[in-house]
Image 1 (tube, rainbow, N blue to C red):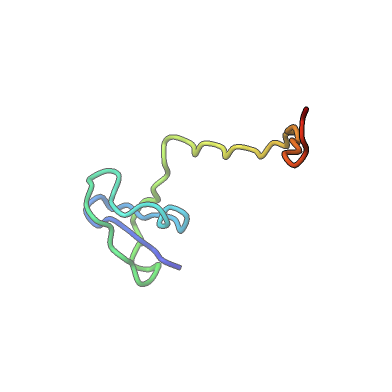
Image 2: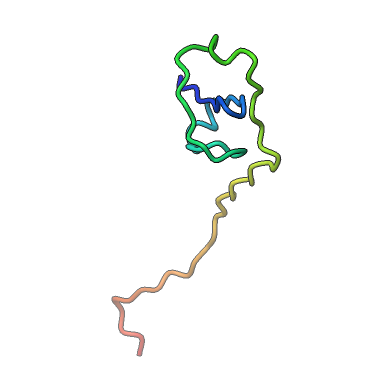
Length: 73
């Protein structure tokens, strides 16, 4: 598991956040890879203020089928 943290802000990021975040949302500096969980003791966990938008649901739709092989006269 990849763990990232920002030493200047003392923030740590969950595994899901490390897939999309490359810089610290507070200070803008690049995040550092942490080798062990012990290195993040005392760091607070970053939680985004805005909830993630829900993904759209797939909707089945009926579309007319055109037979382009026939002569329509």
